[in-house]
Amino acid sequence: MKQTRTILGIVPYERTIAVCEVENSPNGSRIQTSACFTLPEGQSAEALSLQAAAFKAFLKNHGFKAKKAVVGIPVKQVMTAPVKMPPVKNANLIHETIKLNLERKIEAGLSEIAFDYDTGTDAGQTDILVMMVLKRTVVQIKELLESCRIIPVQMTNTSLGLELTAAGPAVCHIIDYPASFELCLFVNNTLAAVHYLAKQPGQGLDAETAQKIVRLINQTLWTVSIETGDASYTLWTFDADSSTLPGGISAVFGHFDCRRLKKTADDPLCCFAGILAKKALSEHPVRINYLNGRHGQQKPMLVSRWLRKAVMAASAVLLLLGGFVFSWQSDSREIARLEQQLDSMKDGVRSAREVIDRVSAARQWFQSQPVHLEILRDLTLSFSENSDIWLTSLAMDESRNQILTGRAIREQAVLDVADALRKKTVFDNVKILYIRKMGKGTDIMTFAIGLRCREEI
Image (cartoon, rainbow, N blue to C red; front, side, top):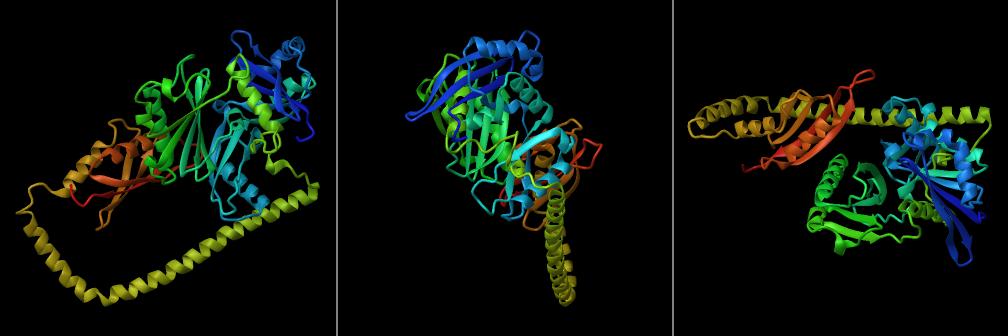
């Protein structure tokens, strides 16, 4: 990219394709020209190949001359999947492990998607967000540009062209587009989630939308065990600064900042296209590339490639197997120790059980409102009356720690129950332990939620 003098920034969005040509000069990059191509009524940016001739004429009429382009895809067309990684540094091993995880998590085959990921700067990173788009979307955009003799050098997400800082345990960037908000959540300096939130054209950020954003981000943070109060929010917009936003927004977000984007073109989408093009010409371009990500930069010989895949897969299996054996040996030693301890306590257990039975019988004469009944009542009220979610087991230890396991038809139903439990004064430390499908061919999910009952109710 350092040798490129001019480049096109292209942003397909709804029924519009924004194009901006940027030139790299000794005094910095500057915009040459920009314009928006509007698709005919009834057609969206997903049917680009039908507009090859019209788009070619549009580029010629507006004087676009650059023959290379970077394309920004809206978050609306992006799928994501968080992947747990062992603390390894080998890039090939990371890639093969991610592929194995994707094959289990997504219904579409790997041949139907284009994906990339950013491992960040932390060599011991264990949580990686994989970003995916349908391969047919990539092919349509490539065919449209190549029909105009333009070479796409990078295909990424439009919002990632901004300088999104990530200082703090949890930072959410809210990017204001003409008909949507895009959310980029960073956790511990690493991209953890992206979200799309539709809005009415011309609608700004109001208190109701702010509450939706906070709730969506809190639900994401619960899955990674981050305290929701630690999140900070930054709004990127062309239209306003913090002094002109409706009252009450700062109170909804807590930690809130407003970044006003410089309007370098008449249309905001062209501004985003220019920002993306300038980023591509810089020394630190966007690290996500659906055309040729970090997993596709090396193209070894066919035999070597298959051999490397086999070695990487075997290494991943051995790593997982080694962890299982170590865990099994540790558990076996712990079980043997506990069995010895239990044998030595048999006589004391019998006497203690008799005392407990007597105390439990006497306690009923003095207890007007049983604590466990109040806990069970609040737990029951946290579940909706429909049949989207149900419990299969409830476990509670003597320290008032509980684990709820069950099944649900929708993932949102589990998140809603966790949200309701968190609002109850009876419970604290509510965490979603896992949500996963029972298997292929079914939409039913299993889940587990951990929580603790307060000492005083």
